[in-house]
Image (cartoon, rainbow, N blue to C red):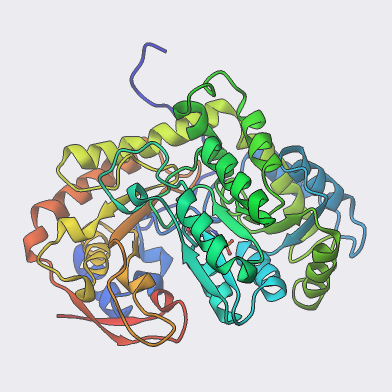
Length: 456
Ligand code: F0G
């Protein structure tokens, strides 16, 4: 098209009001929240970029699908519609619905984890790591070196380091029940994994007789990047790329709050009958009967419809281009961002932006608070607050200190994003005045959700 403006490939059908606040009100709100953006009242947030998880807008057809939900306890036809929609893209034998992604992780790692077990991944997401470590197992990140370098322009920075994976399997293979790949690599900057890398991982798994599981939350965005960036993929339908990815794996954990366009939901899917049976037994203990898992029939129907919408090329083109629109504008304004721009979020490199704040004084936290105080924009620290505390009680700087501005699907318009750009520019101008933080209270696990802070 000869036009520059990225237009949203939908029009608005139902609206939600935003609540305006003054800077003084926001300063009071964040102080009351212990300088933790997770403890803010959402009403006091103007543009909420905390997460793209469950925060997207459902379509007219998804709301219509909700009316079609069948709430039978067992054997609901809504389960069949859901299962068929999942298997259309990911033809695994067993599809086990859960209330969200971490429930699938908890079930899977309760079965295969435990003391002495090692689970490699390109980069574990925080809940995946926490669920693995909770069983006493060890979670290891083996992303390529470029994936740890915020400025590298490598097109597939989510790729697994194949040699490192082979070394791990050679030395500790008997402790590894499965290999995971997170597509896209959320904790590493929303960066995609190439089809070639997935094939190479599969080959190493075959060499050592290990199953490969996908953490596939953002599979459609990943497949779109493959279509855009990988030689030989450009003319393909994204659905075929997704099926190629699925064919390389033995199973998946899934948060349906991302690409499947749900406000809630997830699943565990796999081929192994015995493993599926153990997982279903745990599902019944904690989530529900296998034809609804942790969900209502109406949710299953909304997800089935969402799976047909997320693979539409007009949608994916808009989605990836509009995230890049925010990222490129920040880059032009001299704000360091993880490059290239990822699929669901823009990651500001807070350590590079605030070099006067040492990692153990949490530059990402400082930036996240400043974005909120300045303009009511809520992003999320992904850095030393999230990953710095280790199971042995020690604290170390994380590989990177980032602030993620995650874009809910189909929710904000370009003028909202233009406002976010202005807020970031303003924080950029006053960056030298920002100070570090000290943690005053923290829980034993996943401390970023509930820790409280004091400004230094
Ligand atoms: N795996 C990845 C890669 C994720 O990004 C998430 C969630 C999960 C697993 C867990 O799924 O939330 O449904 O239990 N990520 C959200 C985020 C929370 O903000 O990035 P869940």
